[in-house]
Length: 251
Image 1 (cartoon, rainbow, N blue to C red):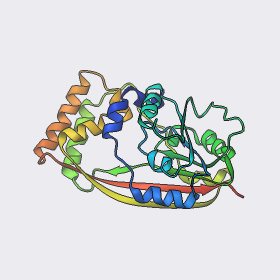
Image 2: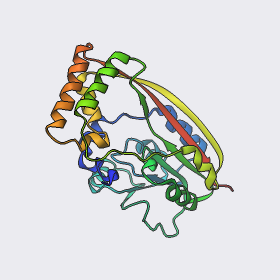
Image 3: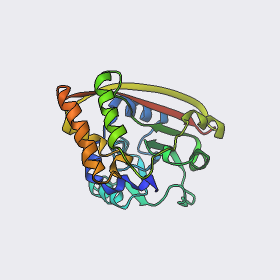
């Protein structure tokens, strides 16, 4: 199973329920990479554009490459008013960018789907000397604020979460320095979300393995999770960390 294409089944729900990034991250990214109307920017796998508009608003020459056909159509509708918006429906791993070079290449929770021995060298080649590669995502902790509820939800996973294939790919972002990049830096921001049972079900329904759940396991699993949260006061607290990794191609 190619999990990269899983999310493309649910563009509307993906856009509605996936968490957003913080303004501070985009301010840091744009400042660090010195992005303005003269910059060429590439976003890898934008999905439905959770990390797109702040870059578009700089006036930069923005290009996205998106594998999903439904996501690509969604992005075209969402950002058609921006004259600096361009999108290519293709596989980043295989796409020939020709002579295109970018001042910034960035990924919001996408590059980890690509083996690092493909992703990092290709990003390096696509950057101008001194250009920036930025990688960020959301890492969520549901255990710390509500251990008892976390354990109850864990029981639902053990009992009902039956999928044909589990997602096992993992990227070590720190390894980027092994591919010629310099000036590695890291910082993060903290956010807290409080969701009702229905909001939480909608949110986790956009996770790759959860999308593939089939009946009767799907109804049994989501029903058990919903019941656990309702009993716990109909709320679950999620503590998010939003990390930002930045590196440069040498001048």
